[in-house]
Image (cartoon, rainbow, N blue to C red; front, side):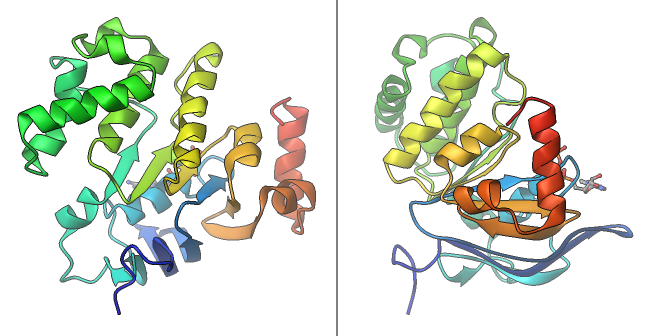
Length: 254
Ligand SMILES: Nc1ncnc2c1ncn2[C@@H]1O[C@H](COP(=O)(O)OP(=O)(O)OP(=O)(O)O)[C@@H](O)[C@H]1O
Ligand SMILES: [Mg+2]
């Protein structure tokens, strides 16, 4: 029976292994993401957070293991990567908006070109999303006339315009000035309230603690510890997790 749209996990990683040359970047990673939940990936720089997200979106080929989207194995060589990517929205640290296109053109590009949505409908959806994310006046603007926070919100709208089953957010506030971080995190909170399933790699521990249902601490490509925010931040079992959190506290970041 197909799990599509059902109660099974939206995304499941089973013993995923990823190497770059002789470096093992993900080792035996298991992960389950239930519908309408937020998973936060935390861990030091280089621990494998981005690589995990890139593998989930088939931007990287895994060396071993399997990844399932709605119960269907997407790492099966017969799976169509483009069809998989149409179901997964991605937002990266650098917003990657096309500078020569207006906000509206940026947002409607994929729905029109990739999903075959008509122009009028794509624009209507885009305007609705822009309004929801507090950007209703910006449809005709070019990206370089927007603040970093506004550009990142446009990038989120662009990902949502394709009505993804799953949203992957990689350090989406890392390039922002501190005063702009809050507005982007508010958007993520709003999406959670609407039931969007998300995985986010983040260095914003306060945010992870606040918004995540599941926190995974990656260390050297291993999910060393996982649990609710209360468990991982409040009662970490592993010494390495404790050390990581202690360093954040010392740096004033937790
Ligand atoms: N294309 C690549 N070729 C070779 N090594 C890579 C490549 N991409 C990532 N790596 C290596 O994989 C490891 C994990 O990188 P990754 O970008 O997933 O870490 P991260 O947890 O996202 O770090 P950060 O917090 O700095 O974003 C690092 O050692 C990195 O150097
Ligand atoms: Mg990263």
